[in-house]
Image (cartoon, rainbow, N blue to C red; front, side):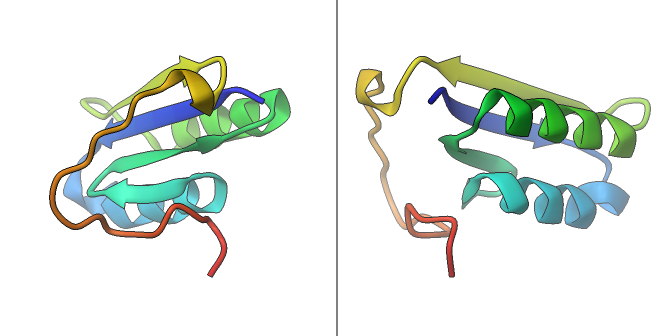
Length: 87
């Protein structure tokens, strides 16, 4: 399953809505940074929903990796969440 890193930069009025949306699909790593596996259908849904929330000046960037195994991840300091999406 493809692995994604996603970042967004949106107006402060929409930060809360974007946070809730992205947390439904991916693991929250830091402010406006998320990662995790998505099926093609989940990725399409996330893109569509994010696009509907966005307004002029907002931006979302997705980095797609073939698999988490091909990623070297180095984190310094404390992260916002554990590696799991489930509470």
